[in-house]
Length: 173
Image (cartoon, rainbow, N blue to C red; front, side, top):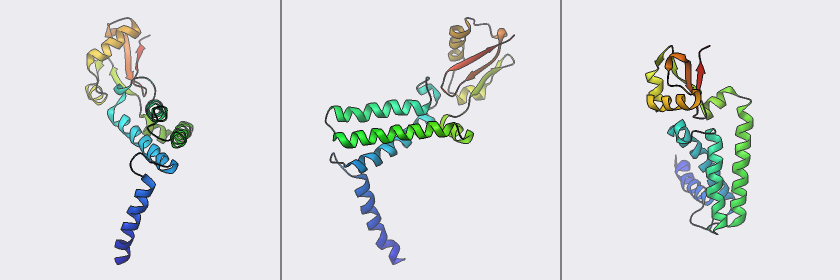
C-alpha cells in the first residue's frame, strides 16, 4: 500500500511533464494536447447533435476547427512553430486513420457519426425521433419546401436526418 502512495507523486510529476504548462510547451506536450483536444472535440460534437454544423461529418468538422485554431497560434506567434506543425500533422494523421477505419468497421462508424434518423413515415411525424434530432416540424417543412419544392406531405414516403445533419426526403412513386 505504501508503494502506491509513493508512486502517485511520481505519476503526477510525469503527467505534468507530459502535459506541460504555460506558453513554453515542447513538441511532445503540444502533440499530447492536440490529440486530447481532437478526441474531446469529437465527443462534444457528437453530444451537441447534428444540427450544430449540418454539413459534413463530425470528424470532418473537427479537423477544420482544430487546424484553424492551432495553425493560428503559429501565425500569430502564440506558440512555437515546430510544435504547432507537429500537432497539426498528428491531428491530420489521426483524422486519416479514423476516416480509413470507418470503412473497416460499421460499429466504429456508428460511434463516430451515428445513424440516420427517420423523422416522417406513413403520413406522420415520428415525435420521439424529432425530439432526439432536436428538430421542430417547421425545420423539416422548410427542408421539404427547399428540396422537394412542395409542402404537401401526402406526396412524401419518408424523411430522414442523415449522419451529416442534412435532411433527405423520399417521395412516393
